[in-house]
Image (cartoon, rainbow, N blue to C red; front, top):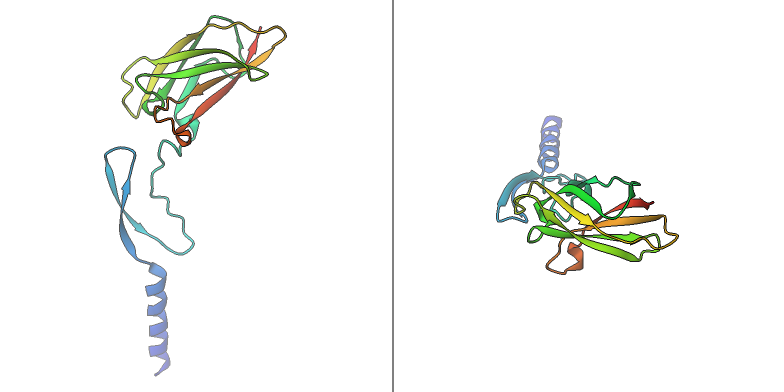
Length: 166
């Protein structure tokens, strides 16, 4: 075999082994929709074609609280407002819990959707929290819990906002 033939075979081998195979992959999502994705997988490459599920997304992409803001001084009764994606609700509501600095539960309120909640979009919510502050307590936290009717702990999600008491 001459040098040209060896060089040609070496070049073809490199091209063949470095390109990888294109595969038609089917991805199941949380909805009834099925996505078909053409993916070229190469050694050492990370496959980023699979969309994140609602359980994989950061909480900041699922719920936004307008009031209170972190560190705000709150007094009873206190109006809570914000917006959350439909995934956060079940039957148009989700719980909000207030804890003191010793993690004792002070109050629970139910945040209600102010629009159609069966959507992937953000839906406004509001509730009013009535509470009594134990003597000597200066800080606490509000915990916005995703409604989880399945009661499967791996589906729990929450957002915690630190607050102050007057």
